[in-house]
Image (cartoon, rainbow, N blue to C red; front, top):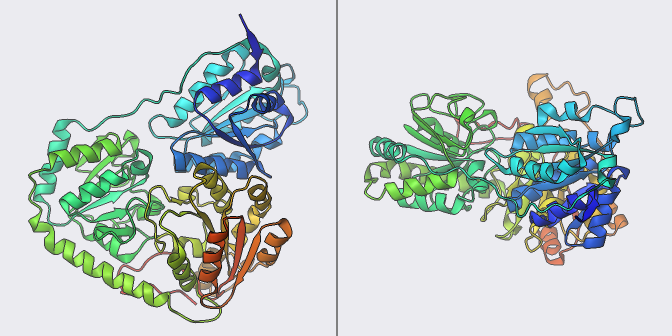
Length: 561
């Protein structure tokens, strides 16, 4: 029987499973796998300058294409430990990251060997499974199982630790075939009938749509259901791409990171149909300021433990989000929705007023630019097929509900981990996933500094991502709180950044600088046409900071200065 090295066996498993792109950083712990990719071809390798960035790239690649994101932690010890942040980010975003982590040879385990650390234990709390491969013959099956586990149920990262000697060992050539992922089905008919009964008695219904609809490919069906029933839709935090911008039934992102109209819908509703949405902290602050205390809540999620965890539910259903939307649509054929017309009209009037306010704030000609003027210029220049990645930070959190997004998926954010430094590396992974679409990363000046070296990765691998760096010279979110709650006593809040436009040109990319009204939109329009890696360094008003919680009780959303 033919034998091959463990490294080539791992390559064959990936290739047979349909993997076409992997991310990583070259290390000595799995050179046999790298050699197999070189010799056999068919898998594109994108080498990062830091393992953390490689993990974010694979995470975003997974979110865009709905497949496992593969990252090679090719150096045992420090290289693998560098992935902790990326794995945690994926874990809290429910992103199916699969880490093939190099480990020291089995004969050296427990001897305080060079670069030895208990990697398996380190990753246990931050992934679906962290497991050591102890037998070379088991490597192919365990790698296939890692991909299957990452994609099954509620998705998440899996870390497979492979000792150095297993990649060199000769094993039987595997024949595992294509990757098969089990899918959860639709609700039971009795549950669907109960949903229709709840809808029939409602006067102020709203759909809260979360990431589960994106993962299940259910966003177009969500739009059809909303249109058929004429129910407003609110997006959970970080998922503003569940419906097209400007759709007459779409309120945008709700909760403390969203807009007051969307938040008002969930606060005043008498029925909340939450589909693929956990109603968790980032979307609700666990507060009835954002979720009506009187509303009946129907919650549908692929993970049973999420249902009713933060707010009591009238009906909880464990089911696939897309299949659930389809089942509700088919069951609601004779539902009379006339009683919702006043509720719907009020919402549409309120949202029209909000859009007028945002148009006005985007016309502010102040110098330095205020963040919302900058975001307005970005919004005006965005093509409809754009993909946007965001970081965490003051300006980026304001951006989440102020962009014009028309396709799904088209927005990638750090979600619950609140990670600074995520956005640019994520944009490179997204660009690798959808090379035909423009990809823009919106970052703060501090956040971009975390991964600025990855500009060379973009150049080397021809990834024409545009980084828009909104420079307010500070760690803006923390500075806003120091100003608002600590009498303006600032320590560590102000930072200095190099001219990132000059840095781009030094590296071989395009560099632009925007300081006056109109310059950002012009630069972005030109950069989009160029289709090469670029940085637009935007100077924004350091005094225009927000505490990032919308005010439900006023008609304005003011920056604090």
